[in-house]
Length: 95
Image (cartoon, rainbow, N blue to C red; front, side, top):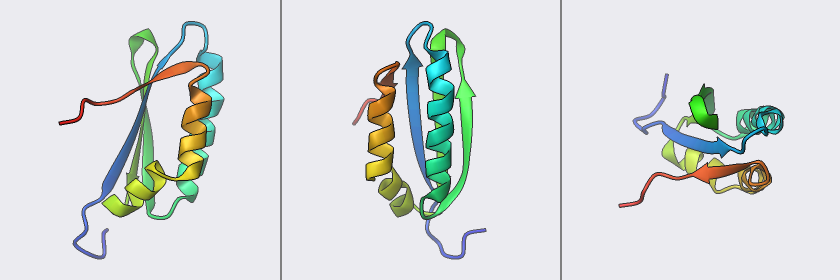
């Protein structure tokens, strides 16, 4: 339950895994999950896998500010850069 009127925030890390690199993705995703759990405002996380090597990691935070803090933080950025060796990051188009 949220104690104030702030809306929860969400961070989605979507990756297209290179063929044959799933074995690299799984431990990386575990590290990302662990790091998110340590972030302020973390509520929960979910992994969604699709065919063709598409993977989505969804993290929910107590507030949008908590989500932005995690997404823009050094740990998240470092882990995302490590994933670039075995996958491609996917971004939603900006308006």
